[in-house]
Image 1: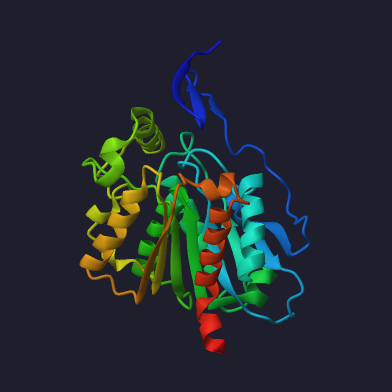
Image 2: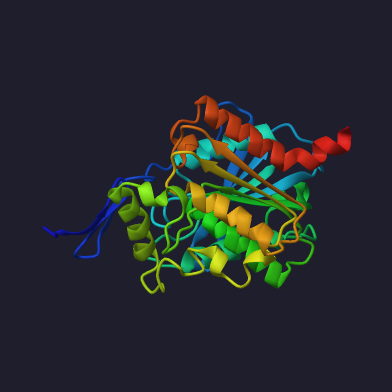
Length: 319
C-alpha cells in the first residue's frame, strides 16, 4: 500500500506512487435544471485533448435573441473540481436564470497531473473557441444564434478568478476580433505573495500551508509566491487588463481577502484604463462560502450583485 506523500486537507491527497485522491469536486452531474429555468449541454472545445465546456441558456427565449455572454472558470486550487460537478452546475443554473445570460462553464485540466500553465492554456483555448463564433458560423448553434459578442464577461472564483485575470491580460495582448470583454468578475481571487499584508499575518498556520502548498503542487517550476501568476501586481502587464469594468468580491474571514483589496488599489495606481471598478465584501464569511451555502442570505446578496453587474448596461439602457 502506497504512503501519503502530501496531504492538503480538505482538498486532496497525493501518494508516493503518484496517485491523487481528490476529496472535493468529484460528484459530477449531467446537464439539466430541476427548476426548469435553464437548458444546458456539453460541447467539446478541444477534441485533441478531449476537453469540453458546459453551455447554459435560459429557456423560452426568442430564436434570434442575443444575450450577454459569460465565460465562467471554476475554482479548486487548480487541483480539484470541474465544470461538471454538482457544485458548479447548480451555481451556474442559478446565476444564468437570474442574470439572463448565455454562459460557457469552462473545464480545464487540473494539477498535479497537468501542472500550470496548462489550466491557463486550456482556458485560453476555450476562450478562442467561443470567439470563433463571432461571425455566426462557429460549430455551436447556441453561440451562433444567441451570444452578444459586444457584451462578453469573464468570471471565476478562487483559482478560477486567478485564471480569469490571466484571460483578461491575454485578451488585451491578442485582441480577439469582434470579441469585446465588457467586464471581469473575480470572486475571492487566489492571489498571494512573499510579504504578508493586512490580515495575512494573523492567519492560522494550517491555512497558510494550504494556500502555499496548493500553489507549489499546481506549479512545481514556479519562482515562488512572487511569481506574477500568483502575485499579479508584480506583472509588468498587470494594468493592461483587457476589460471596461471590473467587480472584485471578497469575504471578511477569507485569508485571501486583503489580496483582493490590494489588487484593486494597485490597479488604480498603475493607471488601468477601465471605467468602472467595484469591490464588495461579505461580512462574517470565509472563502467561497457562496458555493458551500448557496441559500445563505450573504450568498444570495452576492449572486444578485453579480447578476446586476452582468446586466447593468442593459438595465441602464431601459431607463
